[in-house]
Length: 389
Ligand code: ADP
View 1 (cartoon, rainbow, N blue to C red):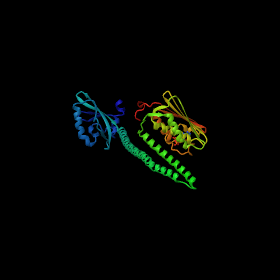
View 2 (view 1 turned 90 degrees about the vertical axis):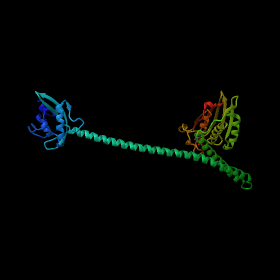
View 3 (view 1 turned 45 degrees about the vertical axis):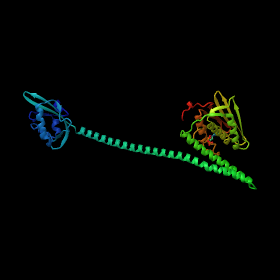
View 4 (view 1 turned 60 degrees about the horizontal axis):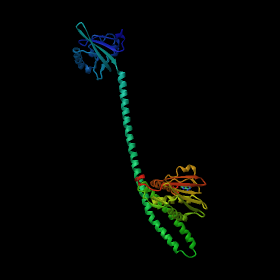
């Protein structure tokens, strides 16, 4: 029953390769009917091109028989009665009855499996192709990103070179303009005298603004290239502040007052004088710029416990709350500052200088009422605290 109902084809051949027993499935697989195959050589089921070879192999097998699959690793084919072929898998076994040797073959039609394998292979190939294609695309993308980055770097280098070149080269003509303007002021007499004076003053102030801007660009460029070093020396902070307040008084608006107090027994620092001067001057100038006419600006310095605290209090326009967190960013200007000339670089530079001096800066501000900027720095700059920036 097993033999006749098996889903695989079963065939038994004798020592000469003649079919002596087979199940219905075997007959059906090869397109025969009834007992057509009985007594035929097994080679009838092998495609004609392979028949000779098969006979040879079969004779070898019958001499040293053992249980094994047939044609391992080969694509075996069977041939139907009508001459068409199909892929098969065959496993061989043998037995002996009396003196006669028999070989039993188990034949499976693997058309579907082969097709599935082919399909799988095709899918795999396709996938590989696609991976290859995507990898190529990725490489291409990476290349263009890298190129863009290179271009960007080059552009950046070019920009900063241009900025420093321009800032540098513009300062010379500006200083010539300034001295000529001074001369014009000196030579102007007669009825138009006042008008000329007014315009001369305007030119002076604009040239000063331009110079200040260029100086900011230059300072920032140098700072960002790490070319600025702290160069400490003995500084009399009170002397410095008095001179500075005196100098900046020329920038005040009508009715504006700048006053100065110092607290503490000492007044001598060991710090970079230029940086300190820049920080103070910038903070005072901001206070003047962002404070209306008639209001007071108060500067104070306190030297205690090895620390200098600089405090500038104004009664100006203040800083909108939502802008406060960005105040020290490069080019940032608060939304209420646009009627006032500026670049948004000053505070950024101030903070960088303070950083180099080992100090910090902060502020509090009430929009519409005024601001207080507070900078703190050590009285004695220690080189080892801030190795080469
Ligand atoms: P600039 O004055 O050239 O715009 P700064 O970096 O010095 O640049 O200042 C950045 C911004 O901070 C200013 O544009 C202004 O909005 C705000 N700010 C600075 N100081 C004051 C101040 N004393 N009062 C009000 N706003 C200020």
